[in-house]
Amino acid sequence: MSRHALAVGLALAVCLSHPAPTRASGMTETALVERVVESSGGPARAALEAAMQAYQRAEQAGLIANPGLLTLIDYTRPSLDRRLWVIDLRSGDVLFNELVAHGRGSGDNLATAFSNDDDSHMSSVGLFVTRDVYVGHNGYSLRLDGLDSGVNDHALARAIVIHGASYVSEVFGKQIGRLGRSWGCPAVRPEIARTLIDTIKGGTAVFAYGHGA
Image (cartoon, rainbow, N blue to C red; front, side):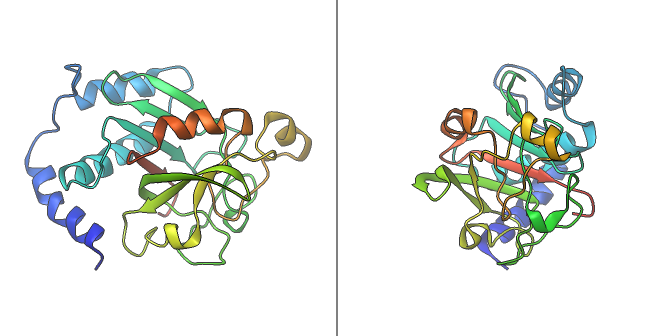
């Protein structure tokens, strides 16, 4: 078992035996979920609640170096939907609601399969933390470190990163009936990639939600 999985497991009992802490703004977790879900274009309750539970466990285990932001990707929605949200957990504000691509091995317009394996070209689900940025083949990119053993903990080795891609656009999607697909990375529109990456880099939480995950 990895150190990440062990720490999260140890924190689970603590998390379940104590009520969710109040946000810095005085907003409870329940109120925050309600506000985000009810916002225009907000995520499904099940996806956000799963993300919040994973976030709380990891935060209490000390695995989130830069708390207060949560990026949620809901792979149960088709790629043409704006299915990525960056949420300020202190205020309940949605900072970004964006298109995001999935891996070509995961499906066409809808992601139905996920993997932790190299060369699968599939997306991974579960909780990640953001690491450093770099400029590579796909331009300005943000490394993701998976915290769930056996589910996404090969993300760094697989070079699963957030980056911009020209195939992530509403125009492209209308032309072929879906977004283009990555090799497993959650790719976003190039116009917002740098701003989004700079907002969430350096130890914030990212949670990818999917059916059967």
